[in-house]
Image 1: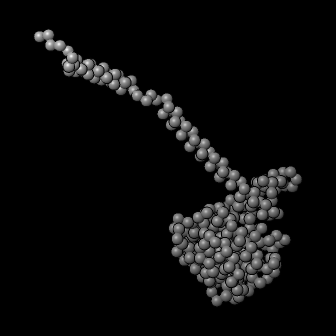
Image 2: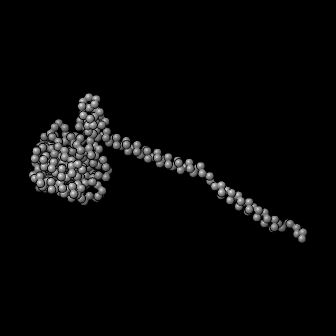
Length: 294
């Protein structure tokens, strides 16, 4: 489940074109990452501003429904973080495919009203229900917000799949900045640095495919998906070759084996000779032209 912050703070334009529009672009990226990484994955959408949390779209693989849900979302009121997470947890509990891992991704761009103790208690409850929770903090990056969500992340099990991403304002889009975070890198989307990231030729080799995802996220994503498709094609070809070799081995074995075994041939030969002798004797006894010399 993706939970967006549609409070009044999301009207600000420090993240172009606005905080809410930046969230919408990021939601599109996350949906693509999750569904492309695993075809069985499904994504839902919620808002937590206004009078209370609202489930906009239940778990789905239809991106059109997600876009419609974002279009229907109104900016109003304050955030209801704890209630929003609890409602998202209930939505995941009623998923059709129970084998799917449960994850909630929460966008936060406004002050958090709940105290740290309440958040930690909720985090332990989510951990008990095996629900991973990712937070994306942007906009009001205050020490109070960061401290509360850091405590939440530690209590829910930050090392077991839950992540905390802090995105300060800058020239890049919010969605571009998320590509290099563990929230998407866990799906094989992010292409991070493998070296010290120095410039020149060494800097180009520090990125997989030689592309900096923060500079050209669409190209990085296209290269990643192309690589995965090529790997799938190669694996399929290998399976076909193995099956072909197996069938050829069976065919050669059938052609090399005699149609009749030696024992069977000998038995047929003896039987044929005996049968022939009996037939000759019978014909001799029953010959009507033979004279009786007795």
